[in-house]
Amino acid sequence: MSQFKTHIDPSSPTRLAERQQNEELRSTWFRALVAGFVILLIVLSSSFWTLNRTEDARKWVAHSFEVQKALTHVLSSLQDAETGQRGFLLTGEEKYLEPFNAALTLLDSNFAKVKQLTLDNAEQQKNLVYAKPLIDEKMDELAKTISLYRSRGSLAAIDLVNTNRGKAVMDELRLILFNMQERERVLLNQREENLKFDGSIVQAVNLISFLLLSVVGTLVIFRLRGLLKKQVEADRIIRQSQKMESLGSLASGIAHDINNMLVPISNITSSVIKRLPKDAKEGHDLGFVIRAAGQVQFLVKKILEFSRQGSGVLEREEAAELVETALALIQPLKPPLIHLNVNIDENVGQVMVDKSQISAVLINLASNAFDAIEGQKGEVTISLSISKDLNLRQDKKACAYAHIVVKDNGQGMTEETRRRAMDPFFTTKEVGKGTGMGLAIAYGIISNHNGRLIIETLLGEGTSMNIYLPLYEDVIIA
Image: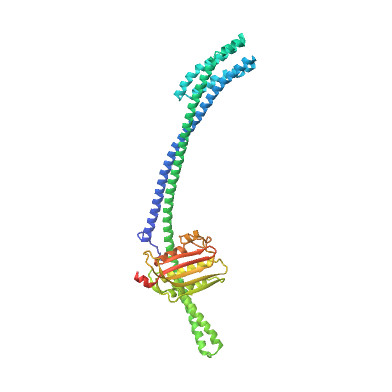
């Protein structure tokens, strides 16, 4: 038994193209990963730096609040001590000395806290050096008046108060503590501004990082989409080529079988008709059989023409015959509820076309028109006319066109759908009912014929697909 092995030449164009596409995909992925890693490194580094700055700024803001709070406690302790002393001097009751006694306990700890919090600030430390003797002097003055009241009475204590030394010391202390608080307010404002600025830096870094990632991601996606589309399109072309070859072989075989069956039908029927009297009713009926057989032969011929792939060679064709050929294949596709109107001007003239490609376009547009009516009663109109002096060419030169219209009174399109209708892979049909390639391919075919495909539509009123193919005379002139 002989064995057959399939050998694929690695240097064949298909293999070379496949390897090139794979290399492009790998290269794109590698560049994307490198770019993503670099951007991620930049983002992490900048984020770490800005977060540290922000955290430091928050700490200094909190520190300023703590200093102001501690200074307020020092001043409150002094005021409480003074309040307790006055209450005692006025009433002589010991209970009024409770604020004074509490101040003696809290004042040293509050002062020590301020000193600890301001170790980083030489100016504030200097103010504390001035304030400490005054605090001691004030507390001594208050304690002495209380002692005099107890030992010598209220007059002796009041005489000491009337010297106004205690008032002068308290005023000086208030001024020092106020200046220290004002200094902390200035620092607080500066630190809050630094915090806002650092927050702005964080936002800016995040925004720039996001934009960079978005740009790189978008570029990579578009690049990959382009490569994948090329691969999908190459696969589609191969599958379509194989499908059309198979369809051509199948159609050829079916045509031979049908023709073989039609030959005896036509011959025997013709023989029977000849043997019948001329006025026989049977002869008239058998004439329908002959005509039906002729129509079947015509339809098989059109199917054979459609199943062949376009050769890419443009030939002169009568525009009217071109549309009528497509109509022969469109009629069987028409749903029962839809009425097909045909309006063809037989005198439009000739066009330079690939007949099978234009037939495929017309069948696709007619099929879309049938689908747009969605199984309801409706009308589809296919018309051919001549449009003169149209300015549709890139060189802006006016010429005459064969104008083919496929119009339906279906649901129509929105403006957004109309704009995207000829984009590859865009479809409004359910999954499995459309690939989104029909109009894109139709647009490409008409463009390759130097023509135009224009959509006119209104939501709820229907759609007109307008094909403009330059007439043969204008093609020659151009």
